[in-house]
Length: 182
Length: 146
Image (cartoon, rainbow over all chains, first blue to last red):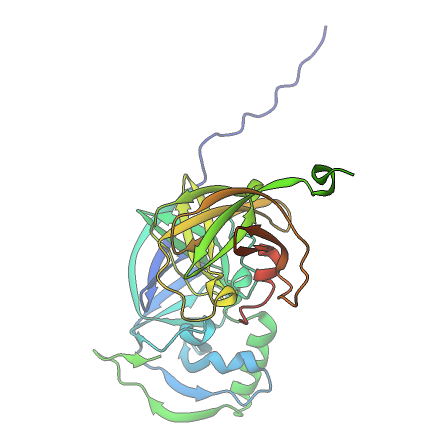
């Protein structure tokens, strides 16, 4: 008797991924909801300027403390090399000490597909984005949360912060209703 | 040797206008001429790319070569010439914004004799007009410097 082994049937349904849509200037981005720990206002931000030789750390413009842990706030405009805009929210990334300053949170939605960035794109965007997705009639880049600050950059920045080498500009940002010019 | 034997083989080209000048691409690299479509933009650092189009379910990068080919004062681009480029691992479409309607021409490609930019891979002679045949890969490799 011949035994036939049946392969487990692969589900034909597409994987659905919840994402948060946020805006920086006129551009809408998506980030996996699972990579965001909290969406905060700008309360408690302390302006800082990294003295590190790491040029990429210049995009860390603020810090804040949450549950006795220091967080580094990346200015998304400096990260994406875009002109300054009015930031009003912070996305605190999960399992990291990094948060991102963004203009606004749009909404949550579910993605069924993230398309690869065309190969013609050969710059930093290949690291910034996991790909592109269609939301309504709009093509939206899906950000790679690890690209805002690498583990090495985070470690250096936290070391500087803890060691007191970061020039805290002593400005607690008043943000009850206001906004930070990012 | 007959005159016909001396002439090189005729090849098909698509002529596209950018301002007052016309350029040519090998016809087999062109897939279609498309009307203006919605340009989706997002931050990036790749020179010459102005965004992407969503066309027949495909994401098509838009490469504005006008600043390289004719300088910064190019007139408004009215159509997209969709070309198939060799990507790093596969062929992909790229849209070139052009300023007017395109034309198909069969002609012999002449070698570049004068000092012309690296992206000119040949010339075709159409009456009084000498049209530069463009190597899109080389244009994109110019890093956006006119």
